[in-house]
Structures are given as C-alpha cells and as structure tokens.
Image 1 (cartoon, rainbow, N blue to C red):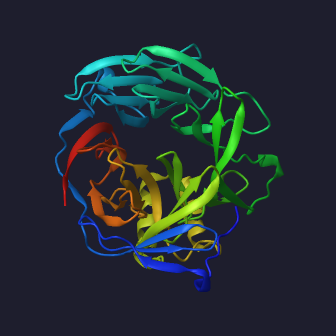
Image 2 (image 1 turned 90 degrees about the vertical axis):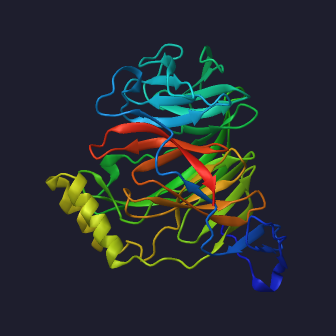
Image 3 (image 1 turned 30 degrees about the horizontal axis):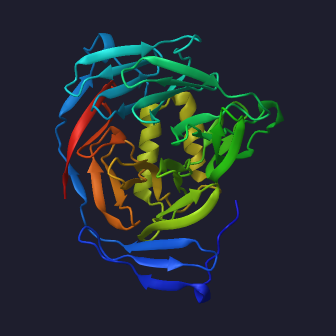
Length: 391
C-alpha cells in the first residue's frame, strides 16, 4: 500500500464546526483529496460504564446453554436478544434481553447450519444474522428467529481461505486473507513480517476485491515455533457506513478506505508513547504468569530483539457503535486492566473517552449498553451487558 505524503505547502486548513458534544477539530485536506481531521486531546469523558452489569450469563457453576468456552463473538439483534457464538460446541446460543434462553442452533459438524470453527459476523440484510466457518470458508445465514436460511461456500483459488469479519449491505463480506509460511523454508532467527490484507468477497460473483491493508506483527522463527516481537500487533478494523475503518501503527489515527482507496484520516493530536520500563515489566509479568517455563525463555528473549519497537501501538481495536460513533481502543500491554477507548462522532471529531471494566472484552455497542465477554479470576467466561451513561 502506498504511503500518503501530505506536504504542508499543499494543505488547506480550516476550523471544523464545533458541536456541543465535542471539542473543536482542525480539518486538513491535501491535494489528493484525502481529508484529515485532527481533534485536540483533552480529559473529556464521553460516557461512563456502570460498574455492575445489568446482565451476566455463565460462570464456574453454569450448565446447559450458559456454560461457555472460547466465545467467538456476541451480537445484539434489533429485539435486544443476545447471540453468542460458542467456539467449543460450534453453537449459536440466543438469549432474551432478560437473560432467559431462547434457542440454540448450529453445532459442531459439516452439515447445513453446522460449524467446525464458528465466527459470528452479525446483522445480514436487515434482521437476519450471518455466521462464518473458518475451517471450510462457508457463510451461513439465519433469519431473525434463528431459523436456518442458507449456506454458501467461497470458491477455491490459490489464496488461503479468507476469514470473514463483517457483512456489507449487499451481502458481500469483509474478510482477511491470512499469510501462510512453509515451515520448511524458514531458518532459525528469521523475522516473519505479518500483514493485514482485507478483501471484499462476493460469493455470488466469485470475486475478491482489495479493500485495505496494513503492516501486522513481527515474529521470530525459533526453529520450533514463531515468537511475537513485543509491542508489534495486528491492525484493528471494522466496517462502518460501508467503509473500512482501520487502525495500525503508533500514531493516534484512523484510516478510512472506500472501495479499496484511502479516502480519509481522522484522529487525536496526541504524542506517540515511548515503551517504558513499566510497559516491559507488565509484559514480562504476563508471560511469567500465563506461559509454561519451557516457553518463557523464548518469549522473554524477544524483549531484547533489535526489531522491538521503542514506541507503543496507539490503538489495538476498533468498533462501530449502533449510534454511528466509532470507538478506538487505546493499546495497553496490560490485557487485564480496565480499557480506555477514544470515541469519534460522524463528523470524525473526537468527543471523549470511555473506560470499560477490567478483564472485559467489548464486542457490541448498542444505544444504551455494551456487551461482551468478562473473565473471572479463574479464567471462566461470562457474557455480560453493562449500561452506559453520558459523561
């Protein structure tokens, strides 16, 4: 992907309209027509998340449909029902807004409506819901009541099977093409440069059109396995208003791709963050706590690798909210700490922060709630819904 250079002599700088819900933003447009919107940083709180969930499903004593393992996604439909993709069972479990079980569909297998490696995508052409099977490149659609509608497989080509993440209005879907290395061609100590390559897959027409791309994490091949170089991570992305919004790198910027072309950049005028001794200590403590002794030496040795960045990634994830805001998760090496998000409105202006609870992975943002997966001190998964209030 080409680099976009914005020479200052060619910039047209203006002050964007200042709404009541946001600080003033400076909008810059270069001669190539790429709109850059930068907002000043500040202590503004966009919303607060109640500390206690309004709904919690699962736990160490749970059984039946609320016993979860390796949840792949949580989707909230227009009726407020929760669709939960359970990775171990390959099931989609649907719950009423109050938490009672409505229906379980899917299951492990290769038949119609079954999955080997399930991935829940979300809404599909109205109130239908789409799911994906990573193992066989197959899209499955259920109606709003959880009844099986149809399944379609991606035609085989020379590329590895895509991994679907979201659905466009016309029924095509946004997918990532994984990078595959043959282990036999690698040498110990070799650096593997990963990348995020996003395509728009149209099953009906058997086409894959490039949508966006970014550099991904760096890995070191030890001769036995690949070890991540600390503070290099995958790009985060989401589909928003039929455009792909993507975050990657150390700058607090979101890039917007339309039809495979970089069309817009927005973000916060905030300095890059240097990797501190505290960041390294947090990373080290996590490896020592959650990895086996045989793995620790390899993982910790990567902290001294010459390719290890000296600055932190800015954002690690991106989510589109039901109210048309975009939430960008500020990267932290402490994966168990509370998470801070930058929130942007439709005008691409930064409107403040939101902090979500510790050990909670946010997966869905509705008008008044956030839903996702919370892990307790034993690592057991709970599906939780928290209420959010304006800041």
